[in-house]
Amino acid sequence: MEGMKMGRMIRMGVLGVWTAGVVFFLCSCRKPLPNSSREDKPRTTAERAESAAAVPERSARWNRPRTAERQRERMQMVNRIRQDYGLTDERVLEAMQNVPRHWFVPASQQAYAYLDSPLPIGYGQTISQPFIVAYMTSVLKLEPNERVLEIGTGSGYQAAVLNEFTPHVFTIEIVRPLAERAIETFAKYGYETIQVRIGDGYKGWPEAAPFDAVIVTCAPDEIPKPLLEQLKPGGRMIIPVGSEWGVQELVLVEKDSRGDIRRRSVMPVRFVPLIREKE
Image (cartoon, rainbow, N blue to C red; front, side):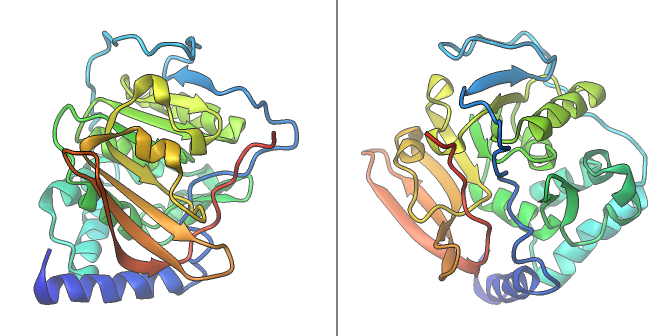
């Protein structure tokens, strides 16, 4: 988006990020539990462990579940994103309307599932604000059959939105209980092709690389080199970058056909830091 619409969206996006206690709730990357395993253990939506040495081709059907549940609330959420922030990417807005956010929040938060705000999902973590999910998805400009890597599965909501565009969604979560809960949710509602790994998102998923797009929902001090290496020429990455206590920028990274990297800041943000597993 360009011109006044883009300026208005960014101004409103910054306001949305910095108000109502959102600043530390946007990230869906998770802190490791005291006894968290260091093994990067890949998981499927059928809860079947796979070897980390290979990513086999899937026979599962690309299923994008549909339901009429709370359809009016979903439409109202999408209209707020369109009107309040000026985001007019209709493909992304349609994806946001198609994915029931209430499937990905705890029972105690069901009444608030369609507010434009983060919500707690346990373990001190949250599901991200809908506008942030929509904006970060929009800048990736995903096309069918592209391979996309998400760092920070959380509840699984962002991965489900990405799955509206492509069956090739790979997502990494460092907190095992959250990852296992997301796997169960994907299996329950029929997201058959989303692949989940439990482990350190900083390392990416080299066995599944290269990726056409990477989305990171927590802030490292610098862009992780493994993620840059796993980005395909012509690929895009959206990632918050900066110190936990300093200025952070949401950065769009593009790799050209020669492998050269271009990066530009799209808005100031405040995300929780990307947490590494202890060596």
